[in-house]
Image (cartoon, rainbow, N blue to C red; front, side, top):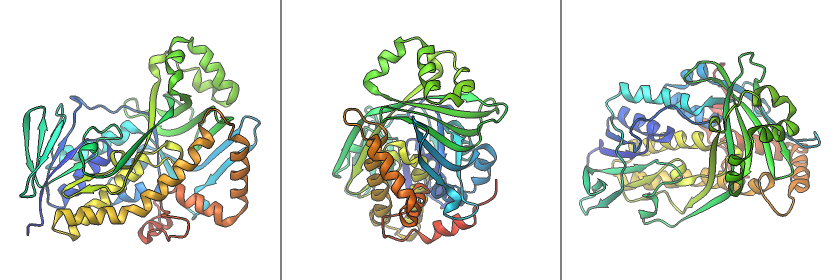
Amino acid sequence: MKSHHKIAIVGSGAAGMAAALFLERAGHEVTLFEKVADPRPVGAGVLLQPAGMFALKQLGVLDEFLNTGERINRLYGENENGKPVLNLVYEDMHKGCYGLGIHRGAIFNILLEQVIKSGIRYLTACPVDDFKKYGDGSVELFKGTESLGNFDAMVLSDGKNSKLRNKYQVKQKVHNYKWGALWAIVPDEAKDFRGELRQVYKSTKNIAGMLPIGAHPETGEPSVSLFWSIRDSRLRRWKNEELHKWQSEITGLFPELRPLINKIKDHNDILFASYSHITMNKWHDDNLLCIGDAGHAMSPQLGQGVSLGVYDAWIMANCLKEFCNIPEAFAEYSKRRKAHIRWMQFVSKTVSPMFQSSGSNWAPYRDAVFNAIHKFDFSYNLMIRTLSGVQRGVFRPAEPHLIDFVKTMPKN
């Protein structure tokens, strides 16, 4: 039985490119498909967690991420009355632990450079619209009616809006949240905003927040990612309003953001991101696999998206090293990822309405719950380990290799 395979990866986001690199370095023949004709370094800010940085270290690119991004020491959130709701300090888990704020475009640039240097076949302007599985264990991919070739396996990493996922013979459910966020990247030449992701909550109706993200991928300037939660049904009205009205609303809630908010001159400088919660009872279907947001998207409250995606890629590559048979390797992937992903999705789904919801006011309950959590070592430490991406359940031990990494994280 052969140990090296011809593998198709659909989608060249962080999870897809990381998967392609891990597999190519293991000796597999990899083709990476991307529907966009000219992929560019776009997007908003991302908070990378220690679990994701562990995977990037295995890929050999962590130093480049650290040189580009901004070290985040804590997550701090307060309500509109100035009372603390969240105060999560990474070093409370272990001295030297931190998160990393970075522009999504910088992630793209770093990984794309590695893809270009590799032997990976990278096809842009090439959407994969369909596939067929055959009795000999191969899978054929199609762009419209045009065959894109036969492969030993297909890895789906094309995000939460994947159109191929529902063709898997796997029980799955997609819940689209009614809330999303407006995002903007603004320069912070003086580096006045550093070291923490900070939020202010107006009941559960709005969140104003900021995340330092280090160097902008195009200008190189120190930058900050600003975000504002908004119900998707209100998006059109927001676009038709004068920009200064929105700016005043944000600075009224979070006055310290005024010098950053005033740099935004046009609605077109702002992006909107929607959220989904995707569950699958397993992530494989014989020689087909889903990784990243394609298989387990969730709200961004825990800041796990990119981190989980690149960690998925590392686990998948390890499974293929240990099992020559692809269906066995992919089944092992689902087994190994189950506890971790289920826990993250459970926590995300539980806390999301406490921060973004209409109707009943969750805010007083949220503030009381998180106040209680911060008072007890067990619950606070559980929250820090979950945020860092190393926790797999209330009483399940964290993965030893992740704990070892947290204890020896590189200084940046």
